[in-house]
Length: 325
Image (tube, rainbow, N blue to C red):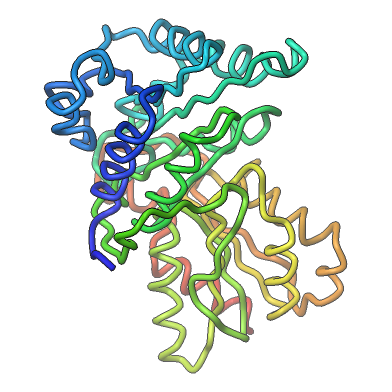
């Protein structure tokens, strides 16, 4: 096992897939000589050249449309947006084209494309560069949505996303880029649609994903000092959800806290709650399921307000304590 960051794990996955399949190419703003907005693609243009690491003008809709067309012709593009917020400029080619073409053409084409996006708050980038918009795309049939929180998952899931024949939105939390963890040195993939228990426990279940997973694990360590043994389930994939894992984990402890950085209202947590309440897991609940998400407000540039807008480790800890009362 190598111990690396999420950022390095993603870079390694891109490099390995570019070497493995000549149909894979990268496209986006500043991904070539500049190395990407957060440095993930640094050095790739030197190895693979401008024909496979393509710098584009500032036109998200334009280069996304090009990539969707290329995918329909048998290529496997990986599209990068400097911030996930900027994908709003490309909603039509993603939601109306990439997601629907396989269905509309009766399976005559596939659209094997990945949309990579740095997301989330915590860097002081303010309201238009700090959002968590993953739930929007979970509502669109024909799209897969992935949000890993560890280096191992980031690498394995990105490789699976690139090999998938279904369009994948791949959310990478900006703070999560520096998360360290063990990654196998041999070739591996992680299947899309499978959650993972990151910590075993019996007293309550904390369900999360992306960088909030780290806060959930930190809160679980705080709870352990109080004599509480918390189970932590990492969703990893938001669409399709691993409903069986959600149900099994809810049944195991009878107390469930769902937490994510995105606004609580109409977020992924609401869907997870519905999975539990519409199954026999609801019969095992000792307390009502609790959600903890971001506040319904734009993310502030001011550090203290920014931190107050999204759940921090202490808030996860306090919410879990309430479930145990």
